[in-house]
Length: 49
Image (cartoon, rainbow, N blue to C red; front, side, top):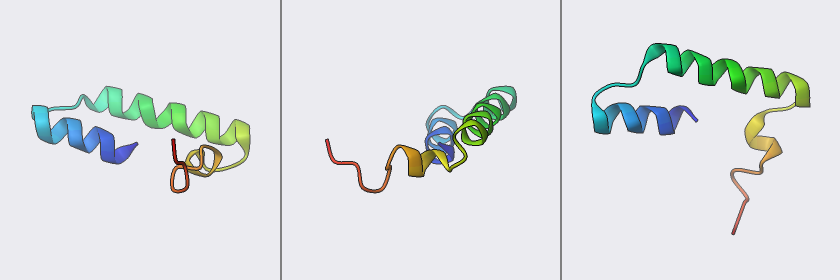
């Protein structure tokens, strides 16, 4: 998630801090609900379409 937001910041020169903080708060909210890391839940490192 951070990599994607940093990529947008690099390409467009800006990424709103408010939007960044909001995205991170949403991630934290769902991780707390799931009781696990978001990337573990979606199998980020092992997913193959």
